[in-house]
Image 1 (tube, rainbow, N blue to C red):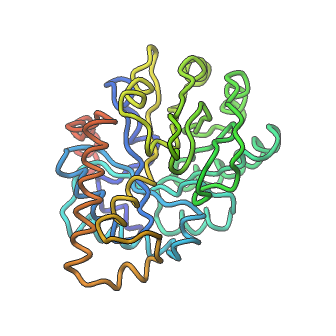
Image 2 (image 1 turned 180 degrees about the horizontal axis):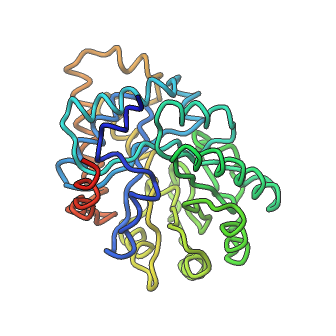
Length: 312
């Protein structure tokens, strides 16, 4: 039996983003590049009474040597062992390989992202449509990307080029694919900004929101000032509903350990519990700050009470 069937607080991406625009907040999608980070994210959500999304991307799976099924097992074990009852989603971030998407869905991920943004529009539509059909048939949500979000560390994506999302193309894309959420390129970048102030094209973001009827996703939020993120959330007519945060979490973990470079999941997991607990606390505190200072999602777990009650 599916692990998620017995848990009334595990939602698809479409479900967990349902109340964001209505109630003026975004849900944080926190990348747990190491499996011990999963509990830190969930604990922060529980303490802040906030919905949270735990995610990992295809490139992170490869770089940190984390098996998809192991990641899912740890997610569900943490929920049950920690007594987590706030709304949560298990999301596969940037992925280009359909086989990995299949593995994630079979492992009870409730949401997946197909990233064919490096393809021409028609090809992106065709690839995304195929994934949407496969995932929706299995009760799983799909995030897609239109435009190219640049990067500085190549952990999540391959390209450092940037192509802003065209609102007219976004409308066509969503109508043709049926994707549940859209990651847009409006000026942010994956990885550290290396001394440069990030830029968000709010006018473009607002135009995209007016053109499509699905939640928008802001990638590359690590290092973006809180006022910029909050403005992107609170645009007239609704802004972004999901904000991806990855680099800041790993940076907090590595700093707490005195490490200058990433390690593998196995290397981190092999550390003594006392050392791991110190790292876990650093990640939890970073997630808490993001929830309270960036996202405004604290206390909003209550938005889902009636849904969870119906599921029990």
